[in-house]
Image (tube, rainbow, N blue to C red; front, side, top):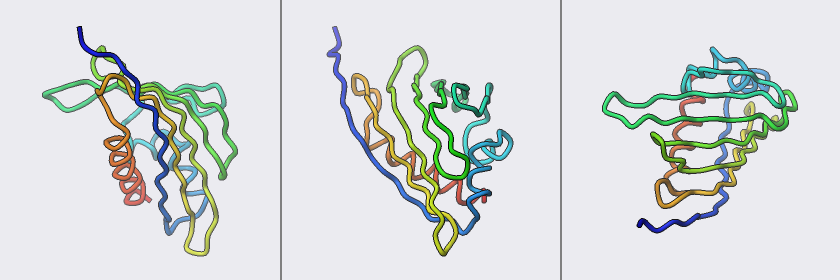
Length: 143
C-alpha cells in the first residue's frame, strides 16, 4: 500500500504589469480574456459562490481537472477562490488562493498567494509555485 501524506505550504508570487487595474481585473473576470492565458473553462461563473471548471491536458495525457469556487470578489481589488486539482482520477491538491490587485506607478501590481494541501507526493509546492509564475507571465503577455 502506498504511503499517504499531506504537505501543507503557502507561497506568494508577485508581478507588476504595465496595464490598468481594469485591464488586469478583466483578464481574470472575462472568460474570453482569461482563456488567452489560462485553460479555457468548461464552466465560468465569475461571482461569489460561482464556479470555474476546466479539464484537459496534453494529447498523451494525463487529464488535469481544475475545479474552483469563488469565495470573495472585490472588483479591481481582490479575488479569492478555493480549488481542487485532479490528475486523472487522483486528487493531487486543494488550495485557497488570493489575488490582490494594487495600483502602482507602473500600472498594476498583482500579488498571488496560495495556501495549499498537496496530496501523497503527486504535486509539490515547488512545482506549483513554478507553474504559477509561468501562468502569471502568460497573463502579462496577454495584456
